[in-house]
Amino acid sequence: MLSLGIAQAGFDSCLVARRLLYLWLIMTHLTVPISAQDLDGAKRQVREAIAAGAEMLELRTDYLEALDAVSVVALIAETRDAGRGRIPAIVTCRDPREGGAKPYPDELRILVLLKAVEAGADFVDLEYANFLRPEIGHTIRACLATRPRSRLILSAHDFRGRFRDIGGLHREIIQTCPIAIPKLVYTAAHINDCFGAFDLLHETQGDRIVLCMGESGLISRILAKKLGSLVTFASVDEQAATAPGQLTVGKLKGLYHQDSIDAQTELFGVIADPVGHSLSPTIHNACFADKGMNRLYLPLLVQGGQKEFDVFLDNVLTRPWLDFRGFSVTIPHKHSALEYVRRNGGFVEPLADEIGAANTLIVARASSPWEHGQDGRATNKEPRVSACNTDYAGALDAITQGMGIERAGLRGVPVAVVGAGGVSRAIVAGLTDAGVKVTIYNRTVKRAEELATEFHCQAAGLDELSRLDAKLLINCTSIGMHPHVDATPVPAEYLKPDMAVFDTVYNPAETLLLRQAKEKGARTIDGIAMFVNQAAAQFHLFTGQTANAGLMRDVVIRSA
Image 1 (cartoon, rainbow, N blue to C red):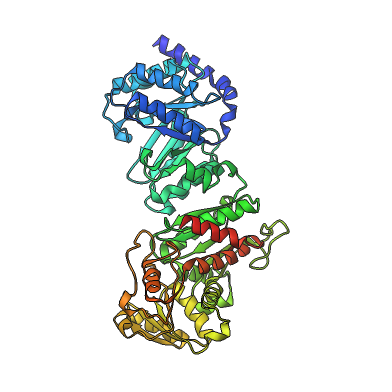
Image 2 (cartoon, one colour):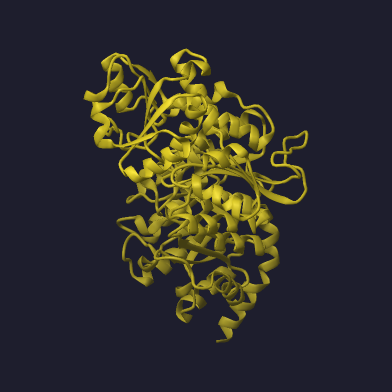
């Protein structure tokens, strides 16, 4: 017991020295897990990770097939020899109960961590639940007391859902071992589950790692640097990912501008379900970079209906320190966006009110809905949410440009609109304003009839497409969108050479519908034109500056 007490005293006395030594660790490090099954493969991954831009490595030794202490020491040496400068590494031998790859016994896993400390590992990661076991916790403490250069990460993972009390767990770890770095990682079943992690990062200081797993938790990995998590994890490629929702280094650094994020970064995003196909982050982030703006645009997977949408926006608006300033809104939330702003007393653009759908929300401290200062930032007055619709003008411009006519030339033209959702509402509103003879075709006829009644046009079921007699056919559904590229909303036999066919789907640029229309000799209009038009208008609303529409189109074409 006396020796353990001395070890504990030595362990605690290293606190100040370690914190001074690792003062540089206040930044967030882009950390790449090394998860190969053999030593040669792991060494190769180390070199690839460093070449890709890793700022730290996580040596997941539980992935090694023939795990032994000698291999671990050799792998640590490899991290020192690879690259031009020394790159820090976390050594982990994860317990299978918390996501470990192989069921190695406790004795071997602890031995690996001890040998890693002796070999000079920067960090070792041990499960907090195991640290609480006296025979493990005392052994780790004693070893670290003799190696002040190494730091201890105490981790907890929940692959089923949220922690019951993440703040309480964080405090417990700090109280149990003040020198340790708490690592708390849980699964987000919905994007709204992420806000507990954000709150913890906002309310605490010092080194800590807090992330959410799964597709719904993806934004926590991107925002880790803004909120001050010690690390965020990314894989060299998708096959090498070691946790659900883990991004690649290339995507985190390229698409989401990891190197430029800081605490002052303003946030925007597209609210959708699904959202993985969206090119909105690609074009808006490219335009932010083009203008030299400290802004970041995120994919926001908001599942559910009005209730879940409302909870998400409430979560955002009650946390102004997150710096969300605006949203693009698409399927299936355009009506929910409008209703939210109406109920909360925000500004609703008359056009969006008439259409009954909003595709853009502006969150600003401004006396008018889109008042910006000279630097493009929202002026610092009372918070307010504004709703507007840029689909209307974006669609009409795409149609008239594609058909080679002025808006006046649309008057009296028979047009078939397939779909009765948010995109349809904006397009039908624009077409009826232009004097077009519109018929709305939809699987649910009642929904088509309700929309047709609002805008004084005709409605029909999809089974009546066989009698189609229109000069312009517009697909306003998501049918044919990536990844379901072999689907089409209108059978090829219903298409005619004297038609113009406009597909609002922009990914892929040439859908099956457009390809079949071209084969029939019809004029085709892709969704890129509308997408770029409405996105450029959104960018202006977000920033007060004119978007580089040419850059937007080039980015979409390269990415679609």
